[in-house]
Picture 1: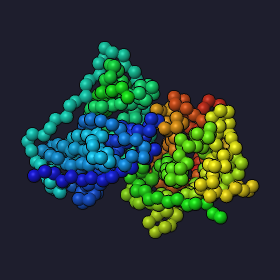
Picture 2: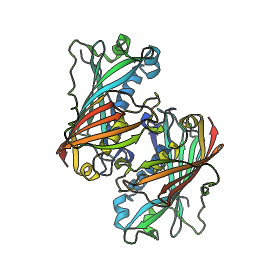
Picture 3: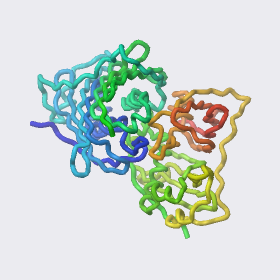
Picture 4: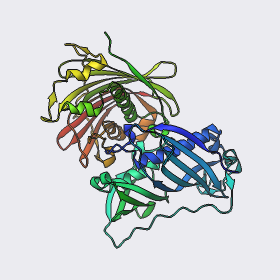
Length: 245
Length: 245
């Protein structure tokens, strides 16, 4: 049995694009969350219902493979399924398809349920997975981890303050903003003339409204290693592989 | 003769909303630009054509009146027309309507054409206005101006750096980001429990990638006066009137 697929169309608009006129990575992340939210709402698994079980969904890791970023005006199809899960982790897949059905981007995410009472990872309630026809399995795919920063190399750092408008309706910082902080440390000229092909990110600790974070980057030719630090704590770790545009 | 109206539907999604689950003012500005861009493209007046005449459109002023900010998931109708123009200024109107056709927000904007050669305001080329059936008039409506900051009052200031992802495809800072800088200076608690009803903004000088701006605010009960400064230069001036939510 395979998990239920859910698809929807989306037109890329100018405020979802960067100065080259292509969808930003932050907005790509927003679209992944949008299509999975829409599937959840369709299945009656909205946030209010999830919260009524005393838990909330939190993403811990993404792996994105990007073939081509769509352009402003392009209509793309977003596709997702909640492929598989075990006691503590749910594995979700996502596709961004062009009008011909070719894959523009493929992503995998690992999600956990956090208990409101304990603030810790909770066993995933069965009734949260049943409607997706997600497969319960012992062997969940493992996503490739981002690298630790090469501390022997030159680290560039930029400070960012978490703004009010970075916070979602759930009171947490929208994860997509991490990508604005991560990638903004790279020179504009590099961003204009290179395309990300592979992105690995792990969210390790939450940041909150008003926090000042440091976005650190080490660049090795076509690989960039990133971390978001809150004081001495790592909030997120990411590795991006690039190609010349 | 009345100018051609253009409408389109738009679903408000979570990444266009703040932590109360309502469309942000920055995103409202993005939607105004989106619907007028879409009308322009439909009429063959796309950016490439405008630029081929040696000019570019620049907004100088907005006046927004907000009855209710739509919620995440709500489908709204965006409506606009290029109502009237004279030698140097074009006056455009915008509406945000709910599913019942009631007005959620009404906005007016004043646009000018800037010459690429002189970097100054240019006479608006007639062929840019004809397709909109915009009325040529000596008497263009004047938008209410924002107030100068009351310098006797306490001014709160916060610094913001213009990020790579703040820049549009036209190489300029997307004006919507000014609202993130302007409103983020207000306490989260105020933003959560108050709704903007009237917003006046004038864009006076351009800011660019890498610039550090200061967002200044003076608060008088339910009126907030704002300015964005680049050193001693005022980049934008705004006044917002609020009601208790």
